[in-house]
Length: 298
Image (tube, rainbow, N blue to C red; front, side, top):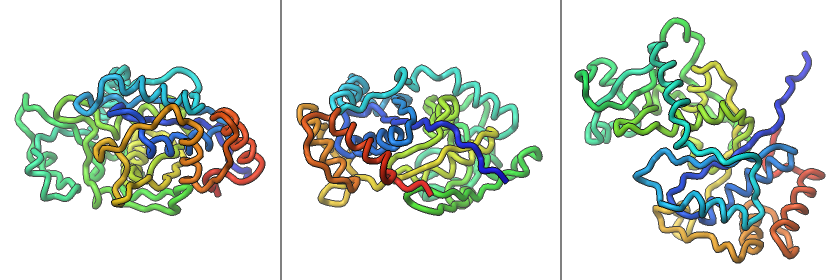
């Protein structure tokens, strides 16, 4: 049998504008950028601004400036999820017509003892009409036309290896539209990755536990999921992930090459300064193209 023809590489970096870029996010951006460029592919930038209560005014522009200061130039126009509501509604309406969604009015207090696995309460006890509700995607007892879809998801992560998860046991039916009216991450990320033709995703391993649900949604929509590579997240001296919640400082754009060298060191590459981010990235991409990949792609 002839080998499958692989689509041209299209990767992406998709930060949420909850604050300026910190070092951990720079490492993730650099890893995804280098992996795309060493494959001769495109690297897209998507701003995941669908959670206004958590977002910081001006953060999206700050992130773009920091990427540019570090020579991480994206291909094409920046995509903003806040401008994609119509596409998300189209997907939700499609799933509704297929009888794959149901409303859920469960409170945080009711959900807390469930430890992340939904028990299907609102599937069997529908909320009253007119109540503010989330929308959950069914993962079991699907309509007959989806009988071929299994809720045990298995995939090979390019870094983490073989992954297997029974989402019925881990998460249960999961939210794809929130009670507060905002679109859930699981829906928006899949709709946009499909629309943009994303073939490869390099991101932090803090998102590894979201991947099975995303692959399940790909299957429901009849689409082939991308290849995943989850790199270890950067942690502080206390072992906590660098994040805005943990008050991680913003990257200093005036020391861009120094920052890139530190990020490369975190990724296991040691280079000497070459004078500018552009020179550093040019040499590294050339080295990667002629030698080993940034992340294994066996």
